[in-house]
Image 1: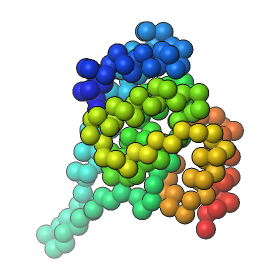
Image 2: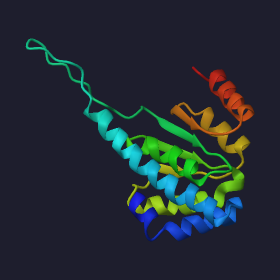
Image 3: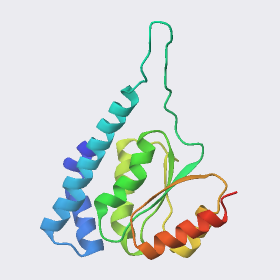
Image 4: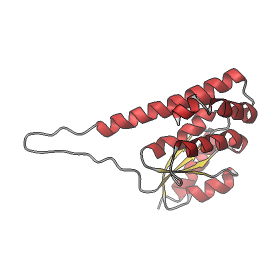
Length: 173
């Protein structure tokens, strides 16, 4: 995804960011091309490093840690103002084997849609990142009350976070 974004997809994602988020060419280049490609690369490197970590063993005992995905899905609710964060929040959990349900901000669906197309072209398996645009009150309520919710990856307003926290807390059982 990073190589596609730095190459043949660069102008498409920048244009979608300019049109969808009203950013200048300069702002779009920093946000959607450069920072998002950096997120993809840094996250892959960080995952590789984490997977390499093992607890200490002794001559008498072998200690081993198996890293596994969460048992459920991660809800990625992304902001209205940054394509890079919108692409990062669902892809980071997917990179380490989790299923992500991605709900972009309603005012930022256009660039998010193009990032989803980038994921598809990059070979992200169908179902690893599930793109679900729609009103937060509809999508959020369905997702946050689902018994298979395992995590939330969120960037947005304090008010939205408190509502999400309240909903999850009310349904914690």
